[in-house]
Image (cartoon, rainbow, N blue to C red; front, side):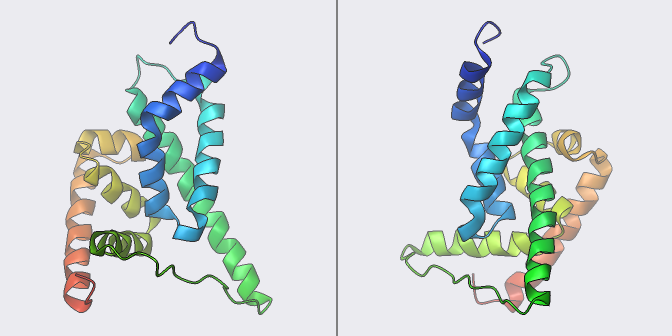
Length: 170
């Protein structure tokens, strides 16, 4: 991969690790916005890939970090845009898709909707935890200590358990 052109390297990396981008997009964006967020993350990876140093971290950790940072920035700008629309009296015109007949897909979308209620950093911690990254690896991506990751996960699980009891989604 070292002697490959930047385009070939990018194509290989994104082909092999597209799941990272898709899962991040599901955690940070509503269904109507996911494609836009994936495009933003692809651009961020294209820009960041030349700086990747395999001696410092695994490629997947690097990609999670880039995708996570872009998703959090996108989320902040998207919220600001929504507030501007509301200030101008333009309400959201988005509607939820009801074409999902599969109960598992509906349940998964419910879980992602809950995740989007979490603060962005907690959302990232939970998503990375669900990807089975260790506390150390989650800390590498988010900049948190291993202990802080553990504490946040505990609080997130408590919050989710409380939501499960208050919602008929499960």
